[in-house]
Length: 266
Ligand SMILES: [Zn+2]
Image 1 (cartoon, protein in one colour):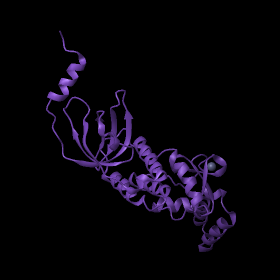
Image 2: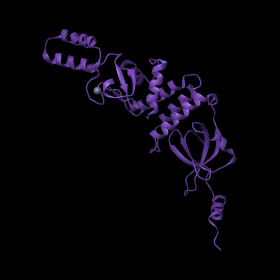
Image 3: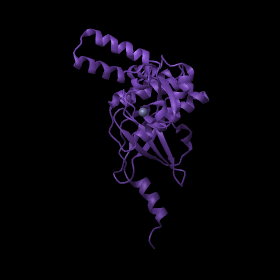
Image 4: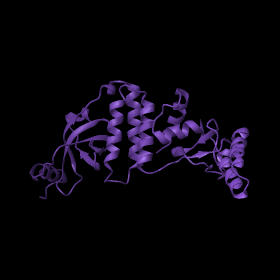
């Protein structure tokens, strides 16, 4: 009589030698439940985005989205590598619902952003680790926004443009005309040659006033207020945030608006 599938499975688990790897640290950025209550877990470590399997067991209380863990990986070369020897490296803010919620949403955004990547730059872990250490004492949405701006810089993405993504005209065209005229005048005073005058006009057309309202779209791509719908931030504050990866220029209401943009995706 052939052994049942179930028997073969049990025999396989207990009799196959499994090499044990060195322990490492990482953040759980995604969890998917399986039918049998097993879990597939994605962990961001300093060098890799690991997708590991966790069989159902009594110690599952350790596994929660966003947590930092110390763990080992065991692989028999056939099935998905297994998550073993888990230790929770806790932060005090994990007991505060709002901080934990913002953190978990950020890790899910990061999971979606990195979904097809396995080998990653160490800086992703460093950004997440630095954010986790600041989360206990700072506004969690500010921490999330600052981590995101750091990721944009790491990836060499600068979504801030001097031209509207929709109509491709300069933001200065919709700004404060008196400011533009004074800039033009300043350039015009330098000399009378037409090339300088044209360049001055072009600069004035592109440079918006710091208070110029900008429509901030998905991934912080910018547009004229009249060209799109969505959240609005002043150009100067948006520029300051993206350039410095600091939210210090944004007031609490602007943080809420910027955070809603972040939730649309990285
Ligand atoms: Zn436009």
